[in-house]
Image (cartoon, rainbow, N blue to C red; front, side, top):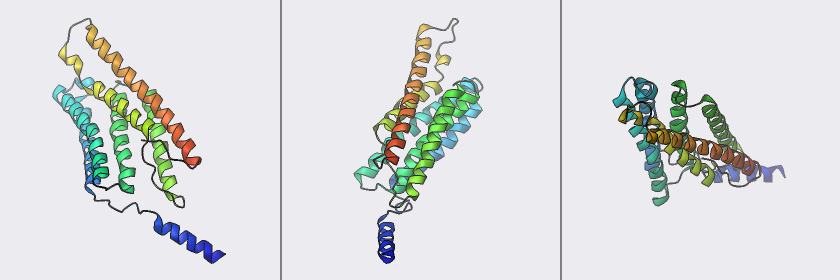
Length: 221
């Protein structure tokens, strides 16, 4: 009986895809490039100062870079599916790249007083917790990286749009006092999008935990 169990364990181990399989596939290289862009983005944000008041061109550059980095998320996923290069590394690193981009941006924004800390903290707790859970799932017998599902993907869309609007220094287009109505509406829309993303963030995190421990497909991003 022991030999049979050992054979079954070895067979399961052999069938489990290695995390390093296809690590250098083109879609994964795009993901790595996005991580590099995150570092550049955060440096630009810091140099630009709160709301970009210290260096307005750098703030515009940071906003454009954020939009580019967020948009390329679809490129690596599309490449992986089209050319049948979906890998465990890609399924793990793609959402991590998203988290580094969005969470890093929110931390700097909160330091500068552009975004409430409680919003950033809730995002961080959920994102870090789910990332740790992903590694936990991978270490279980027969465990695989759980790919993103629709609640988490929708969260990412709202979050990226909201943060893009937050980063864009629209205030510089109209310096009149009092603040013009369009700028007030723009600010409110930005906050609403971020709060909607927060609700989806917490919801998808709960769904992920329930489905993971229930043995079903997760719903993270």
